[in-house]
Length: 264
Image (cartoon, rainbow, N blue to C red; front, side, top):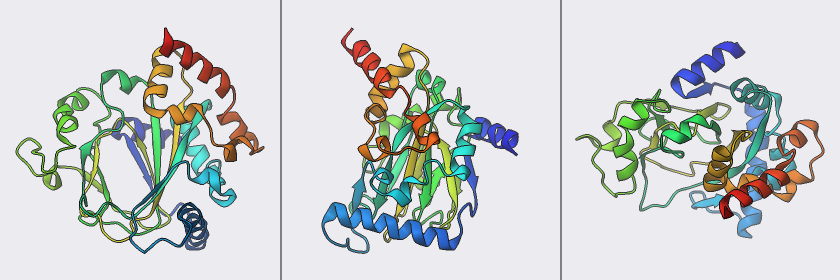
């Protein structure tokens, strides 16, 4: 199965695992997430209040257990190899009402970024379907030449009503990752993705992992796009579980090296 997972991920740029967590586990996770949002806001958020909190799982012991849960950790190990680093987390709920869409884009654009794999995991706490807030992906767009062919999308995605090769964003051919609580999406951050029809509270937790940088170019990329990975939150620094310690091992040295490169 691990071999199939890696082949699927390498080819299509994502891996979608259904019902990795039970309803009871998702209830516990949801309650812990609400505690973090409430603590950040100083009151209980409105049902569709727009909130983005990062770091997120590092602020709560129940949520931090997701980072090295074997269902997550073992899959990441099969996709990135045994030596990878923690790259932070997010907790999002609601959305800016004037922007119920997130047009086609990639988090890590450009040919040089394709050589350094970073993975984002999405755990939705509310159901999503294609036209009501599900993340959509273009399979294989994390690889050349398709990644290069879609660069016009990257340049236009910040426009309010962009044109995507003569199509509206919602009409671009894609794979909609329709999700129920308990499902988990792993995707390469160089994969082109979008969201249309955001509605309701649309709560989700994102976990991020990256290959341990092996060269100056990868370290520079990490600092440019994910500098927070070089500055782990105190919540994860205080954790003594072996898998967590391994993910942040030698992070001080990596940070110092990244700073030297940026000054040079």
